[in-house]
Image 1 (cartoon, rainbow, N blue to C red):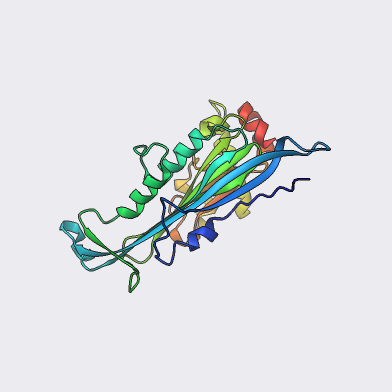
Image 2: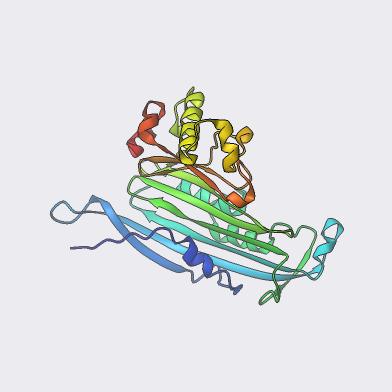
Length: 293
């Protein structure tokens, strides 16, 4: 009998491998992982198999700013650190991965210029870190003191099942000041089609007001208050409330994810608001209902 395993939530593991500033390489010799989980027809007694193959890629670069111009004068002789780690899908059963791979490349490089070449996207990210425009950078082995510029990105699977994949891009950026900025962005993929499930593919057209009502009720329940204005006493900016399109599917919940500053101060961190799918069943598209219900 074939025994199958599933590994998810590895962001912390392979992000840590980037943090020491070593050149871990992004174009050859990456660590690979082959995983299998249950699904399409296979062994005896009704056991089925859904083959999953992934490659864990990471690369890090450290620099010293040897020249800076204009607004970047303060960076002269500053240390710069950049790293990126990616959980790259090579095979998920018979799913067409083109849309997912395109999205992951865009998540890393913030452009479609590299097509499906994740290695080029990763190298572009660490070769020209955000905040260093107009600077001349010199490679160094490690930054001797805390870097004045830091850029880190991790792309990994938040959820991976036979029917659903949720890809998360978690980022951290520091460009001087009291603290850095961090956050996450999510893309849901329906593995029966290989296509992304954004907000407009999860909720039917014309349901915006009803979705907002369900989200507001979930937020009030989370903080155990009865009125939107009461949220101000809980650290939520009630005047800034909006329905975020940054959401992910988790079991039978729809998780609306607000990054720092969007509806609360930095100290509050990201805010997650969970709406049970059964409460908004009539608002869901058939594709979303098939996954959530």
